[in-house]
Length: 248
Length: 248
Image (cartoon, rainbow over all chains, first blue to last red; front, side, top):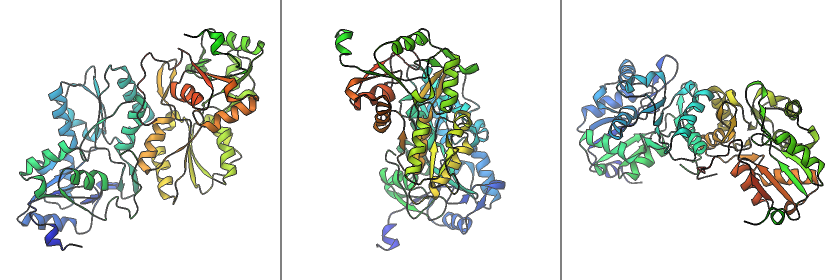
């Protein structure tokens, strides 16, 4: 195994995943993972550039940052790359009006988006919002469209809360893909466009950056495919043995 | 186009799908499709053997037959091949104890099955039962197992009720497959074992049988792959253009 110094040679920027790396969500907002508050503080004192790159789609960036600050993290809204704002940019650029199947906590991110007479569907980690009725409505909207367009804010399989593993948006994306015979456009990790925008905000090239996350597909695989280095933590959803889905 | 006589040469048995072919479900049980009551009666007066081969998994066979009889159909329980009884046979043969994610209407079919300390999951068309909480519970049961086994009663994408298109069990099967990185065992059409048992009950060989259904994958594709002939009706979920899922 190469020494750490060698493995990290030339690294100028660090992208940090949030859920499962900095904290585990759950009752009362969740809990910081041991050592993570100090690790972020140390990184920020170092010569490295730091950015937070999350697929969190239940909360607005403002709420997420508020929660992290209450847990003791040094983080501001401008340092966070998140899928909902990225999706809003795409919707505006392409003149799309979404039907939203999202958590109430993130709905405010879409305040400036026209949702009348929808011509696409956006799904995010809706949690309890993934009722049969809501899924069926999203399905019916897609089936009515000549060219159904489905955006999924991330495609994570599950995440860890303090109470246990929880289904993420990915399984519901797969459900709608199969029901409608379409392929979703993923906004968030592991999409290359998402890493690109995070790196641009940080002013660092892919080969100079390392992604730190708990998801072997979304964080590690996605970053490596984009030419970055990556490091998987053993917190959050990390498991010794991971069954990878066949068609990820 | 070959004449009908030629296409049907040697046919001795007819397998009839139920939902979308004989009736559309919905408010108050649903409505018979025009002409279908008389068509079944004519088939039964003919020299052909007739069997009903359904993926219906919201209702027990007894309830389904009761509904069909109220709509005017000549049908008895012994003439119906349905996935829940087929699943019970498999569970008993393999000594499996299921966690059930099924509609209350079909739960009675599993009365004789031990569901304590589950070592597999069975999902069926649960309708509103496909809540986030119920899906997450099924997911957690699977993730706790060393070798997760998931049975899906059919894998239909959607069906038609009088009020519109409704998500079937297939999308939820895909969701759990993706979440857990596993492949489900399908009990029902288009599984070859299911067609085999229907044909055995009827006493007819595959090449002597024709399947009549509204589902191009479950009914038509499945039957043809099993060496039967098949005919797609233009009722039920039939649409002029069908987008086939990539990984069906």
